[in-house]
Image (cartoon, rainbow, N blue to C red; front, side, top):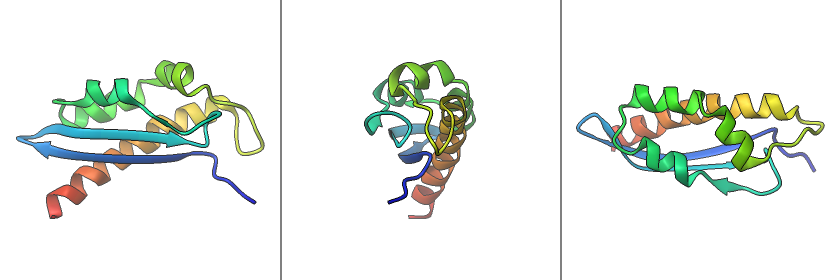
Amino acid sequence: MERPSLAVAVAAAQRDGRLAQVRLAVSCIGPVPMRLHALEARLEGATLAEGQQLLRQAQRHYTEVLQPVDDLHGSAAYKTYLTGVLLGRALTQAVGANRRQ
């Protein structure tokens, strides 16, 4: 059975140009799937650009909370970096999807 190097899920809305109801989840990076409650709280009320920047710069947070492990699917450093990239992309998609509804 194969498993991905990393999986992310993001739900978010925008109100008056600010992020609202942000939910972030990550799996396959460490021992257990996890919601990122502290980052969700920090993203509330931020602009999309501010949110993307915060997610890219949260490497220390990912390392401490998610406890990434080296395995055949990638190094801990690679997975930590990719977490920020993929969360940022998913945040953009989530906000865009909510606008179209």
